[in-house]
Length: 554
Image 1 (spheres, rainbow, N blue to C red):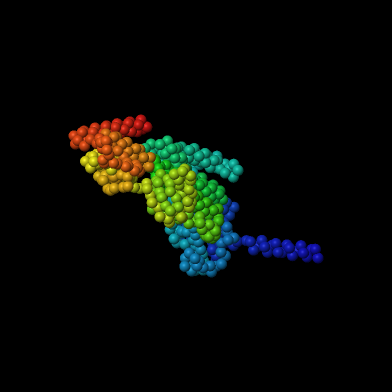
Image 2: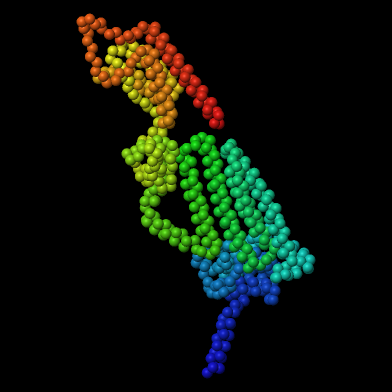
């Protein structure tokens, strides 16, 4: 029984081995490709049989084409798994060639290399034969025959299955790569410096650092690409090239990620420098970090997806999974999505800028920061409001920071016994003060005697200050108030306050009180001119002081 089992196992093993044998010939796509590669191996070399895979009459051309095609496949790192090639003599390609009797070995990497069925035999197509020379010149732009055929015998001595001339070639390639890297890096750095000077005139050490860090990965990309073009000359074999090209594709993808990240940082820095030259507190400056993070996240996402495809992961599967996951996250965080959209609307509409004083039904204060999710507003009592951007983009906002002028309206109450002539002079004097004031609009003010209150005669002052800053407005008010007080004191106008005065016209033995108002026109005009001249001198002096302070700061 034991002998029978052993015999059966022996027979099955023989059948299995025989089933794994691949036949030569042109009956199937598998046999044709196997014939081509098998008869170009050292142990089974037969160039005449290898040339039969081309359906042409010129045998010499077929021989050269078969050798070149093998070198192309090896140099591109296109390793062929003969077991996965169709062994069906009636194979139909329904995907790439519209139900034709053709077979493409590498649809993505080498679509021009394919087989077609002619008279029940499979040959490399006529298009493949016609394109071999052009493909070969692309893969071997510097040639390869002169190295293999003309190198001395010693150079073909093998160490660890690699010939001496190949070691020398790798060493020369490494040295040239370092030299080309530093040269290209310098050229790229100079190129970006010229672009920077044409865009902005403000030099910055940060910009120089970003340009320098950007030039390195770009130079590495160019050098790596040049290496991939020269590598086929070394004739390292299909398996070696396949591994090398995988690493090259990964390195280039990583370098491109670094290039885009550095490029984003460079653009942000240049824009930031331009913004600092115009306004230090703008909404655009607040937008920069958000845009920077979004673009960086997008670059990383695309880069990682590309790396996964290089490692053999199906990109469609990854995108579908990411879409489903993104939908689930979006449904679970609707408020966050709303705030993101609100942030986008704020940056598009720009209803306010950083530093603006805004008022709404819920909050009053100065905008300090616009974040990715919420906006921070500091109230007058220095407390902080944190308002979601979705809500802020919907409510009615009164932006005091966008006012062209800051309106100031008040009423002055003078005593009832002030003579009309003196009131008229007082009003004219205030108008002149406002007209001479450096911080008011000379064509936007009103000073009028508007009515009679219980204890005073009312003089209305309506004035517009030029500065939109609250602190500067208060300083301008201070100057205006002091000038009005000095004017009133100079011409003898008294301000009223709530009082009750009992005045007796005729009393035995008493003389009616004289209020002592000086209504002489020349005296009033002299006093007004003196007050106006003093105010104008003070205003000019303050303006000169402010200008010198600004120059000192610069």
